[in-house]
Length: 203
Image 1 (spheres, helix red, strand yellow):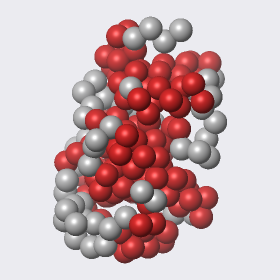
Image 2: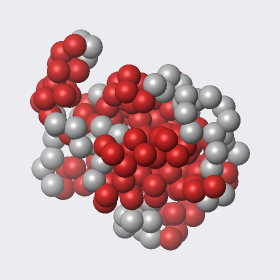
Image 3: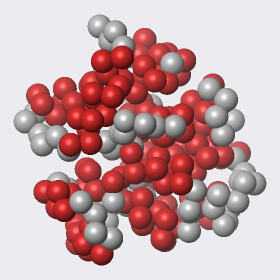
Image 4: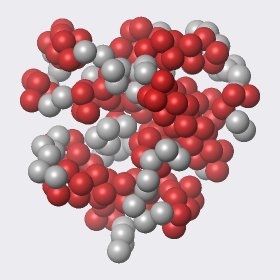
C-alpha cells in the first residue's frame, strides 16, 4: 500500500492522516519532511511483509522525527521538567529527538499509544526489548531509500525477512560508526548492542 492511500481507523490519533501530515510539514524542513514520508512508507512495507499493524507503522514512521528540529532549550527544559536522567544533558539533538522527543509527540500530537511512543523513543538508541513495531521504525529510519545502507541490497533483504537480525546488524553498524568517528556513545546504545548483536553471526 502506498502511504498516500492510507486512512486511519484505529483512533490512535484523534484526526486523519492528512491532518497529521500537515502538522509534520509545519514542524519540519522540506528535506526532513520528505525523509519522514520515506520512513513511513518503508515502515508500512516492513509491517505488511511481517504481518504487523500497518496503521501503527504509518503513524510511528511519520512522527519519529517530529522533534528533530526543535531548539535545544526545549529539550533541556523537558529533561528538567520531567525529571529525566540528567546524563541526557551531556548529549544533543541526535539523542534527544527520540529519547526526549516522544514527550512532544504525546503532548502536542495527542498520541497516547504506548507502542507508537516507544517506537519514537527507541528509534535513535534502540532498547534491549523492542516489539516488532519498534524494531520496524528503528530500521525504517536507517534503510529508507534516501539513505545508503552498508552492504546494499543483501542486507535490505535481511531487514525485510528477518527483523531481529536486521536490528542486530543496524546496531553493530551504528556503534562501529560512533567509535570510528570518536563520537560519544549513549549508554542505552551499548545495552542495545549487548542485547542484540551477540545473538547473530553478522559476518
